[in-house]
Amino acid sequence: MFVGHYALSLAAKRAAPRTSLGTLIAAATFADLLWPLLVGLGLERVLITPSPDPFLRLTFTSYPWSHSLLALGCWGLLFGALYRLRTGYRTGALVVGGLVVSHWVLDWLVHRPDLPLYPGGGPRLGLGVWADPAATVVIEAAMLVGGLWIYLHETKALDGVGRVAFWALILVISASYGASLVAGPPPGTRSIAIGGTVFGWLFVAWAAWADRHRAPRREARETARP
Image 1: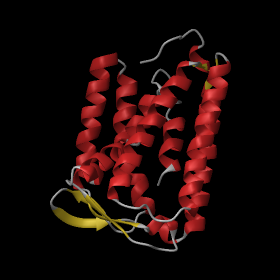
Image 2: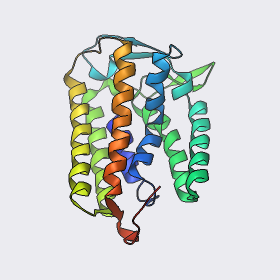
Image 3: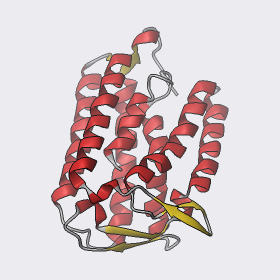
Image 4: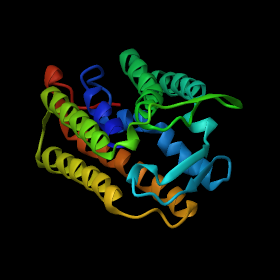
């Protein structure tokens, strides 16, 4: 799951209109922001496995701290608590905490049975939709359209940056997703660690910037969001 996490972040704007889109994306993709760092440090492992299915070119042999349900539950509590402490926005704290955990749920839909429930063992789960690339693309595209509709219904651009920067972000995310479908396997785990970290945080910062130039329609007088 890739685009689907961003789609859920867009849709979450309805529940937490005062929360920056950058923060919502950071929460929903937190597992994938943490994972490349842990892979680079050798604390989690992934194997590159050439496959005609673009979604099955990585075999996740060990990622208990970034992708187990229990770990994400703990990360979600921490993320939400820190957000509440920083902003005082209780609704936003609940939403961002939930988004952190949502990553496991969305991944469970598409992954092979490789998602752990908790670090250290136990069953590994996954419904395996990735085995059908067409179905995966349709599901994620539908999620993106739905998330965009909700976000655009909930916010309005304050200026040209709010329009152009936002749509440029969506275009780059979509293009990145499309490129991953036709590109070959990554050359190594180092490139995964570097690329995942750079692009993951780039999208977070880009979303925060674009969102600062948009306002919640239901709170038209609001000019700043944490």
